Image 1 (spheres, helix red, strand yellow):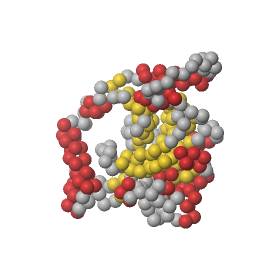
Image 2: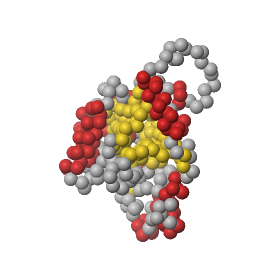
Image 3: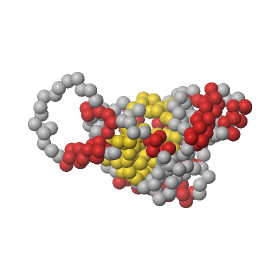
Image 4: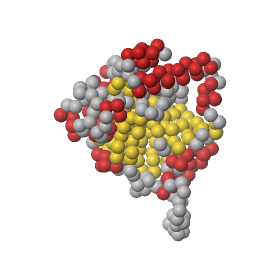
Length: 306
């Protein structure tokens, strides 16, 4: 995938890191908790107009498209057991971010919202008919309310799939499986989203599955790495504008980020990460794969012990 939104980065402050053809743009706080970011393939980097870290729960990028720019907002919402004050603060911050962005530019809000979306008829215009759960929890109600006020839909609950491809989270014991990662889309571009489903075969060493969205937009021609046709010189294109200068500066910054040979090598240098940790991580991943293939009680018990 060209652009991947990730949560629970757990890095302090904000910054960027380049490795193996990808650039990680991350936003964190003062502590090693929460954290959000974007992993961007090199062939998409030139279409990133800007990256804006907001907090350890929210960040966004502005993406240059063919006819307009679009914003991707990455979120990590508080869990269901957190107090209403903490939850309300998150949605107030998210609302403030949305209100500061240009109204004319479409937005996609995605991430881990810890929200179960049910099948209540009153919410159908916003959630569709394909959610995994029957009853909406408190986080789900807050997410639906936010989407409705912003004239957005929760796009992933509109696509029919097997339940295993709707699940985005599996507990360490393998007993609890939820759909709590979502993607909110402006109503005006909802038809651009062709499909959303979880990718069980993609291991991210996490209790969450990777969620893949297929979006068909008119992206700038810079996105196409190998252009087969040479365009005629257009004098108007040669005229420098402020926006183009800014975009070029961003592209240069992304190219100049220090190249790291391997992120795993960097992490392994940490004192807490040794061969024993690596072996335990691999054993847990094997146990997790067994549960996905055969969710027997023995396999679930084995995963819970890892």
